Amino acid sequence: MITAIKSGGRQQELALQALYRKAAEFRRHFQYKGLSIQVTDDLIQETIVKIFRSASSYSGGSGFGDSSANAWMWTIAKNVMNDHLRGKKTDEVSIDDEELGEASRSALEVELANKNPHKAAGQTAQDCVTKGLEEFAAAHPDRHRALEMQLDGEDIASIGRRIGRTAAAAKEFLSQCKKKLAPFIEHCTALLQQ
Image 1 (cartoon, rainbow, N blue to C red):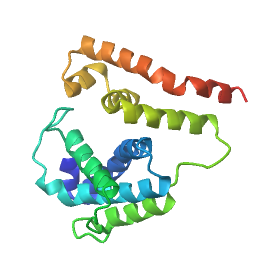
Image 2: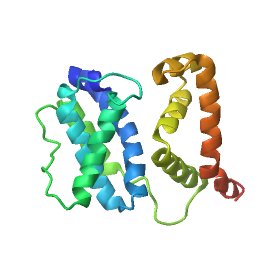
Image 3: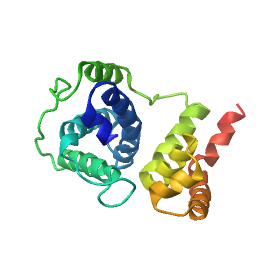
Image 4: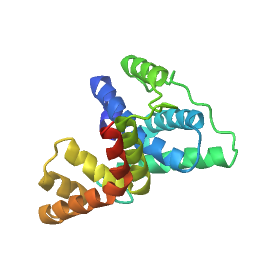
């Protein structure tokens, strides 16, 4: 994702889409920490813009280690949240950033205008599962990401390489991830029967 952001053009547009999917993890974390939806939305925008602005300075590795892109993006997100919680005046961010291509800027504007995945009332089964997944991701970000890779169709051997495990160990890890996920969404089955 970071490489694609750096490359610009169509790759940057695709990276923006991937970054918004990643931002869902940040959203869950911010809300888990008790921030309102409105504050969370503002912090998500600020996080995304800061990741875009500083992508060219990223020099870490891949996977889930301390120097991974995943850890780097989480550091930015947590710093944005911590600055907000400390009441610090943070740098204003704008989608009129020179590093954003025109198509990426347009996509960002549309995404910001349309997003509000949380409905105040009338929770559906899908809303329930989404909220459960958000809470799971906040509590277990690495496990959530591994399950997300599997849901995206990635094979177990590839997931194993990305998380630094053998295929057999990755398969067991994914099994344990599913067991850890269950308590977060079990209560949603009642909504499926309505």
